[in-house]
Amino acid sequence: MSKADRTPESIEALRKRLDSIDATLVTLAAERQRIVSEIGRSKQSEGRQLRDFRREREVLDHVRARALSEGLDPELAEDLLKRLIEASLTRQEQERGRLSGRGSGRRALVIGAAGRLGRWLSAFLDNQGFDLLLADPSYALDGENRFRDWRDAPKHVDLVVLATPIAVTAELLEALAAAGHPGLVIDVASIKSPLIGPLRRATAAGLSVCSVHPMFGPSTQLLSGRHVLFMDVGCPAAVDQAEALFSETMAELKRIDIEQHDRLIAWVLGLSHALNIAFFSALAESGVPAEELASLSSTTFDRQLAIARDVASESPELYFEIQRLNEHGAVSREALSSALKTLTERLAQDDEAGFRRLMLQGRDYLEKL
Ligand SMILES: C=C(O[C@@H]1C=C(C(=O)O)C=C[C@H]1O)C(=O)O
Image 1 (cartoon, rainbow, N blue to C red):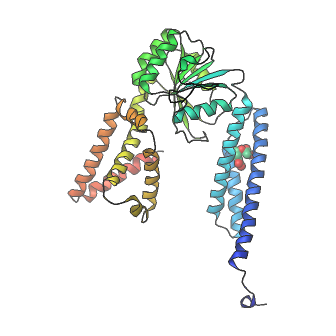
Image 2: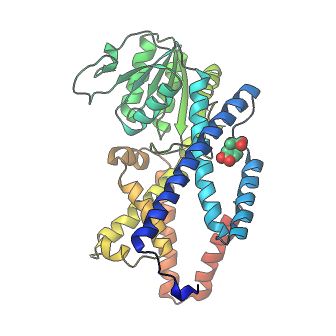
Image 3: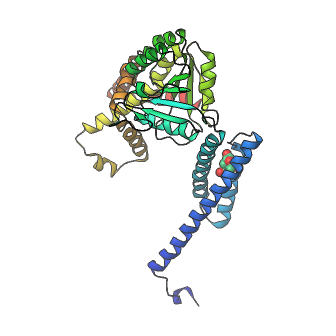
C-alpha cells in the first residue's frame, strides 16, 4: 500500500497516542526517581558524596548517543536529562537531610518565620527533624508552635534563627545575650556591617553566635551550586555548628571575614539588584506596555525580563535594606552610572573603537569564569 493510499490518522487519534506516550514518560520519570532515592540511601550508608559529576557526564553522553541513533535532536535529550538529574539531586539532598535526623530531639526557634526566607529556613529545619517553634509578629493568633511574640515561646531551644530585619536582629541579639540563651544563634541578614557590633557584643556576653548569609532566594530547592557564607564573630565553635546544619546539602559552604562581607556583597547583590531596578524602572517609564515589548522580545530581552520580574517580586523593605544599609553600596551604584555614562558618551561621539573596547573589556573580564 503506497503512502498516499493510507488514510491518515485523525488529529484526535494521534493526540491519544501522544497522551499515552506522555503518561509513559511520567511513569518512567517516577521510576527513575525511585531508583535515584535508592542510590541516595546507598551513598549515605557508604559515606559517599551525593553529586557525581563524572556519572552525570556519562548519563548525558549516553542519551545524546541514543538520541542520535533514534533521529532525535541530542540537545533535546540532554535538556530532558539535565532536568531529571536536577530533580534527582533535589530529591537526594532532601532525603539525606531527612535521613540525617540532625534535628531529632532538638528544638529550633525561627524568629521572622512568616517572611519568605523565614519560611524557607523553617521548612529546611523541619526536613532535618527539628522540633520547630515559629515566631512572627504578623501571625493573627498564637498557636501550638506559633507565637506572635518570640518571648512567649518555650525557653529551652537548641537553635535560634534570626530571619528578621536588621534593626530587629540587633535588638534580638542583645535580648538573647541578656537572657543568657545557651544554644546556637544564627542571623541570616543580607547586610552585615550594622550587625558587626551587636554580633561581637553578643559573643562577648557569652552567646554562641554565627553570622550566616544564604546566597539564594527563598524559591530555591536544590542547593547544589549555591553558596552559603559563614562568618566567625568570635565563636568558632558556633561556625562549625552552623555549617553542620548544611552539611547534608550540596551547597558550597564558604567562610569569609565579616568585615569583607558588605564590600563584596555590594557587587554581588547590590549591583545586580540596582541594575534590574534601573532596567524595569526605565521600561515602566518608557510609555510602552510590557506586553507589547514581550510580544516582540529577543532572547536576551526575555532572559533579562525574567530576572527583572524576579527582582520586582521581592520584598521592597528587604531590597531597600540591601541598597541603603550597605555602606559600600554607593560604590557599586556609582560604577553603574559611570559605566552607563561612558557608554552614552562613546555613542554620542560616534566612537566605535571606544565602544568596541567596552565590549572586549567585558569579554576579557568574564572569560576568566
Ligand atoms: C543517581 C545518582 O545521583 C546523582 C544523579 C544522577 C542522575 O540523576 O542520573 C547522576 C549522578 C549523581 O550526581 C547517581 O550517582 O547515580
